Image (tube, rainbow over all chains, first blue to last red; front, side, top):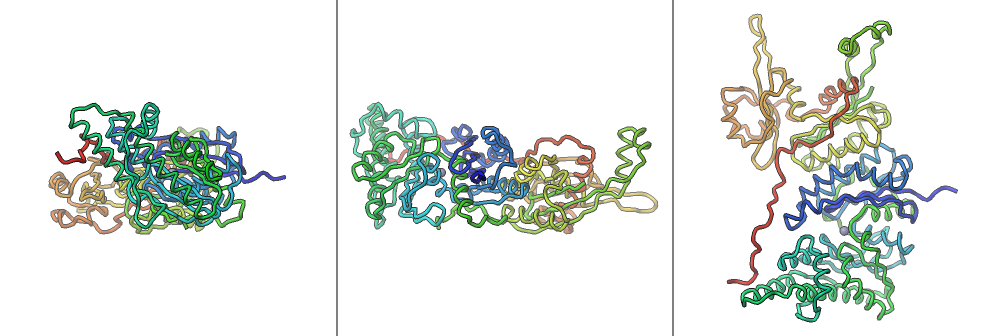
Length: 339
Length: 259
Ligand SMILES: [Zn+2]
């Protein structure tokens, strides 16, 4: 009996150089090199710094993945790579590497959509994805609600952020509160000591688009509230602000995701992206899905953030379904659409 | 021996395959030769031949063009990637995004094929493509010259070379055409490269050479054959950025409420 396809997946859409290896539905390696520390002093990801770091980290990360999997390049059946969306210069480094490995090894190349890969990674943890499912993908780079009839095919965007990504809102609010970058984990931690009902921050609605998100008003509201306290010479209750802000984000995201499932008659919600590591989001999603009889599928936090395994997980499906590989002239597409 | 070379440091993408045939030298001669002699024996043979070469001007599409171009030159040379013995790549300086495409490709191919990849300054490649030795009344007249490439943001990357284009005498560095003109005045008369062509008006005091404005992979391949034959262990491939990422740590946070 022949082995299921073994795919090496490369991800460089933001600040993580990810190389994962998946055989069938088995995760063999998930190697990661992050340039997050280099960005911290800038208060956000600097694209040029990220691109430089990808160039240096790529080959060593490929080797770490191979060694973790106990394989050599000769064992790889195809190369999959994030072709978009993401930071243009960063994507280009990963795509160049993927093409070079594919060309050198004489193996097929598959350029994949980053968002579809975030959905596909859950199959490594919870088995084959039901068709269709709804996916909520929230990170520092994207915030989207998707209808996924089949993760290897076109995906429909139900809504997305119209301004800041959810993760960006966490970073900006962290800055207002004097917490470090990236803001997500620090706000999550502060919030555990705070009262989520202390301040009623706004839940932004997007006109005529029930599943879209807006976080810029929320971010401004938090800043105003904090500045008013400071002006009055009062101390800022950081934990309460963090908890109330986090509640507003988790509330909006989960309410709209559950509503989207109901309206489209879909019984499975997949949540991914870096913000899916947020403890309040996870808890509230579980409560609301339970109440509506929706099956919630959330990969563990390590697979929610950007990684190469998710790209490989999707690559396996493309190979198994016998889909056409990508040509060598495939472009890195920073604003790649879903279909 | 087959060498694949490519450069993505300029507005062009270029790739070439060079082949070098080992000359048949009697073993007893090789056995008694010093390392220096044996190298001159091997170079005394046919010399490297360019089996395929492509250049395409393609601003900002380096990522799309390079891999198919490599596949094309390999096919034209009648070989596959597995037949390669070494890779040569231009390290720039040049606009970062395109530059990285070439260097990432070289690193990955070198890794996948377990062959060495040699990095060469793209300005050196351009310099090698030009020659400013004139012959006059029984003696050579040699002129140093400068190589300029487009660094965008109204700047050029530059270096000064000897008349044969073999040795860097000044640079490489980054400058505006006006500041560079000051520095080169009285020092060189001829400027080569796309940076000189682009800023010809600011560089009106010099003779601008229009010919061969981009580094060519065939020339780069020639430069790499020698270290490949000698089995020199390659230096890590580090792009010649010559410019820091322009990011500043944020200052004091701006208030959203008017004071
Ligand atoms: Zn992501």
